[in-house]
Amino acid sequence: MDYRRAVVFPGQGTTGGEVSGEVREAVEREVGGGEVPYQLAVFASSVTLFYRLREAGVEADVVAGHSLGEYAAAHAAGALTLDDGVRLVAARDRLMSEASEKNPGGMVAVIGADPRAVEEAVAGAEGVVVAANYNTPRQLVVSGERDALDRALENVKGRKVPLEVVGAFHSPLMRDASERMERLLEEVEFREPGVPIVSAASGELLADAGKVKAALRAQMLLPVRWVEVVEKLRELGVREVVECGEGGTLVRMLRDFKGVEISGEKAGEVLA
Image (cartoon, rainbow, N blue to C red):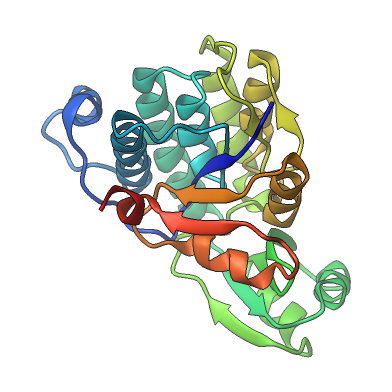
């Protein structure tokens, strides 16, 4: 198969955009007249952009999502219905917010440091702190208790940027949320994906319903290995990445991958 185009979906840290049509109706069925949870706003905006791409004849040969974006990717691949995706993402937002209140923490992006040095610093630190997002060869996000983050990164070289998130995602501080999310996922029937999904936790191709469900069950505690996602896209021969997000974070990260000849555009640019 020719995997020319990958459509990718961002996670938290991006902003939600326009939501319309059946996506808006699905969100309204879930929240009624109430406030739309942040994660659901991001999911709904991403899916709306995907629908617009599809209507314009821009089809995905393979999809991938960064953390929260894996739910949009599962829907885009046909493995998860829109209503189930909306319900699960709304629950994910609530459960992670509750876990963050119970076990406060944060996340810090380390830019320009040797990833191995960061891993060693994290491994030797006291408290709960882990490598959470391997975003690019020169950007690794660390997650955990705030004091533990400070201690672990004190002597690490590189620029350190605290992320504007409410908790220590992809760390053991999310264990309670992860276990409750697993139970919700068990109740959902997944379908065989129409296009393969690249797992953000392993870079593995997920081509059947069971693997898609298993990946979503495990994702909340596992690190995001976006470096491996990009490497898999390169191996597949992908030449174009389209990001269904407002900020273009995943497109910008492509610049850090030397020797990877994949062009990137935001969905809005493709549709303009």
